[in-house]
Image (cartoon, rainbow, N blue to C red; front, side, top):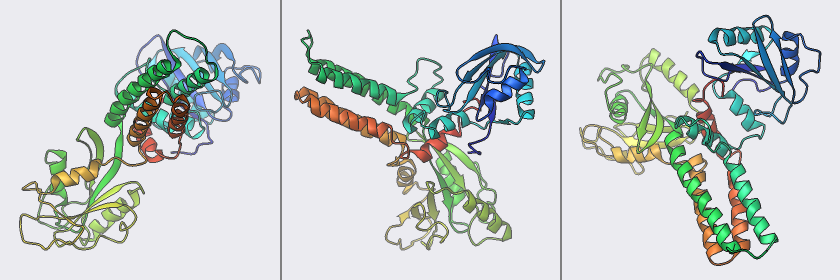
Length: 399
């Protein structure tokens, strides 16, 4: 992401003709910037305030300010509600840019909410799942808040033991089962929306990388040739495998010409720590030192249908022609990270099952402790940092 201390602006509603449009401004100095453009007295938009007036001769609009710590992003923020003409919103954004704001990148408002502690990692992935499902409103945008509410209810039932028509154990069990169902439904959505770690297919020239790429993608996307150096720029596609979305990149071969070397330098610079490598070599040669030991790697002894090659221990024989080993490759590509949002939700489902079992055994105190552990799991910021970054890249600019 870009610098997190500067002033950012974006259109937060669809760019289409409508009754109203919303332009959002976030960062230090947001209120003062709007005050100047609307000729308001200094401090008029300090705190949670509202002002109506003309902004730079563009439109008569409503400005709503939010103080630091109270806004969506956790920063000083101003929402500008103007008439719903795309041209009007565009001119307001241009005026804000002249006044020192820069245009936000995709997902940047939510990214700031995340790093400022307004949303947990799981909340962001919940948003990503709902966003992908095209559910506007009514969705669970703050899963950890739901957990906190249920935790408080359970603690209340334990502390204030009164006579009820329904026992406290049954009430708590009902709450937990409802949460378990919501968690399971959310886990399914997150798995569909989650972008797994990127996968780079690498190896020496003529190792069959492009053939495997086409096989995984399901159709010919890159040219396959016996001539070394055919793949230089490579290709990148998001492929659905076993119901999961994964970004796969073909790359130039090692040991090729000068241009191949330049292409490889670009690829090496683009690989993140969390990315996975499929290393292909028909001769089972060692993987290149720039990736060895730094990434999760699957070593493939490729073209196993063409010749009898002695497969080294730890290498997987694969043929894109006969299909040998392809399922194992897909298994590696789609494996859930132990720090991913879907893994986290699966862990929460497991804990909730334990809490329900505790209530069935009338051990409410144990159930409460398990739910507290669930809450700690949901609020863990660092666990799915990479997954959050990947999800935010696919948000719209105004989100």
